Image (cartoon, rainbow, N blue to C red):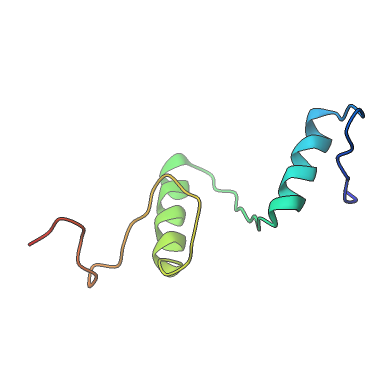
Length: 73
């Protein structure tokens, strides 16, 4: 979809508004499809571990086993 510019007083469809917000925030997205929920969780964990040093917006943030956990003594 081509970039959409939000303009005051101009209504946008939800999809257009979402695209405009992502373009403005410069958020990069990627995804993969899996056959099962377990495969999805496994893939997510592998990806998050590989990208542990990046700023990600994700509810789950597993850390490499070598990294100390917060609050661990």
